[in-house]
Amino acid sequence: MDKTWRPTTGGLLCIIAGAIHVIAGLAAIVGILAAGMLELALAETAWLSLIGVPFVILGIISIVGGVYALKRRLWGLALAGSICTIIAGNLIYGTLAVIFVTLGKGEFE
Image (cartoon, rainbow, N blue to C red; front, side, top):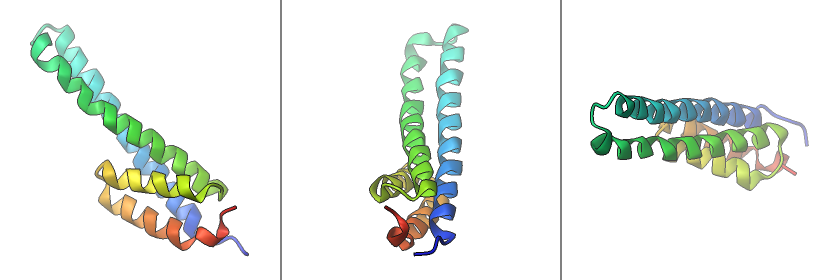
């Protein structure tokens, strides 16, 4: 079967959204910890840094799924990366990535 643009587009959308989530998650972690280091309210705000951890994890899964979509291998992982993009809150990129990866299922090994 010929290679089409669908898995490539889905993979790129996953990678872009995953990078956004990783950057946002790290910014949340570093920002809250920096505020705590300035002794604004260390005990009250330290737990808020945990908000960034799920974004980083979901972003990494999205990036890995996007890479596998570009390689056209492991369709399940590529789909999982697309779904993690939706779960992290990027509905437009995630929905389009799920659609494109699903439509390109026949091209995966």
